[in-house]
Length: 154
Figure 1 (cartoon, rainbow, N blue to C red):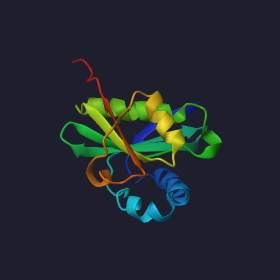
Figure 2: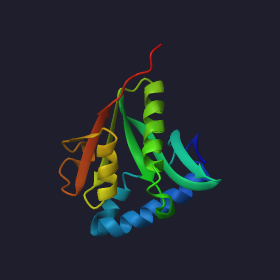
Figure 3: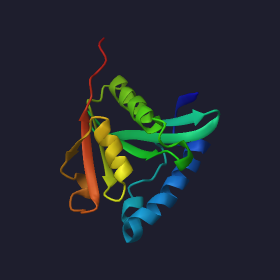
């Protein structure tokens, strides 16, 4: 059974998963990796989800405020051994629910063209491609997405 735990960027399993993610991205991004790495620092992220499959870290994702009302999804990763089980979609749903609980109405994110699995994940989960934002504005390898969130009824 997979459990989804709310934590923060100080979680050791999150840090290990992010290290694996960065190793994968260094290969996929090639010469562009240093550019992207500067925007993926994990210090002081307050909202992190770590998935555990039989007590083994099976994936992670995080959110941080981008602007009032908008959270940015960061550091989504599921190790190869755990892919194809719906874990990434569940992590994303937990992050979206957390955003809504905090009264954010939109999630945005950036991924790379060399990450077709990520692009498919976001499209499958209702994200729409938008013009590249912020530091990704003129970066041809970036693909940016957004999703409007429904706030919980009070």
